[in-house]
Structure formats: structure tokens, C-alpha cells
Amino acid sequence: DSPCNIGNPEEYSIKDFAEQIKEMTNSTSTITYLPAVADDPTQRKADISVAKREINWEPKVTVREGLQKTIAYFTNELEIAGGEILPTGPDAARPKGKLDTMSSSVS
Image 1 (cartoon, rainbow, N blue to C red):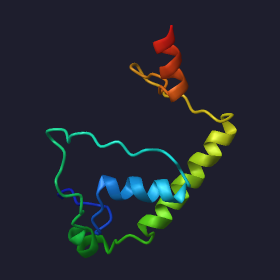
Image 2 (cartoon, rainbow, N blue to C red; image 1 turned 135 degrees about the vertical axis):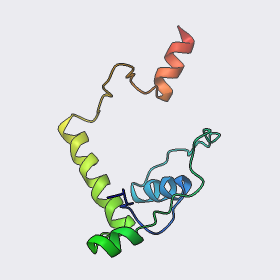
Image 3 (tube, rainbow, N blue to C red; image 1 turned 180 degrees about the vertical axis):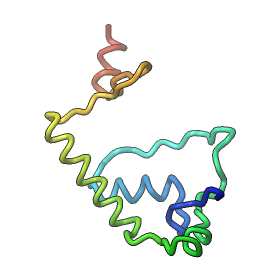
């Protein structure tokens, strides 16, 4: 009755994901590197041995397929929302783009 990991047994860094997503979306965005937070895990490789043994579970979708499905989902959501999805929540703020930053520095 203990928790078990459900995830992908292959290890990917955040950089790996950022580069894959950038390539898959034909993005010209710049990837910005920030310092790791104190509790950032150094290993992101799920040990799924308990899930395999106890419930005969393993991933059926590759990471690339999962990213393709996620990109397709959000592309559709953006189209439905008219090209922009606004963040929600108590501390939500609209992301600042280049034009927003330029106009606020000019004001």
C-alpha cells in the first residue's frame, strides 16, 4: 500500500524537453537558462519497477508522441481562444512580450 512512480523510465532534462518542443513547434523562441531552485530534483528518471511488478503497467506512448499530442491539444485550445490563453489564479499575470516590455519602458 505504498505509492509508486508512474512515469517514463527514460531520463530527460528540462533542456531536452525545451529543445524538443522548440523543434517540434518550429519556434524561434530563445531558451533562457535560470539557476536551479533549492529543491530541484537532480534525477528525473522514474523508477517504474513497482508499477510494472504490481499492476503490470508501463508507458505505451513515447515521450515524442506525448509531446505531439500535447502540442496539438494546446494548438487547438489557442485557436478556440482566439490566439491567446490568459493565465488564471490569484497571482496570475499576462506574460510580458517584447512589445509589452518596450512600451512600458517608453512610458
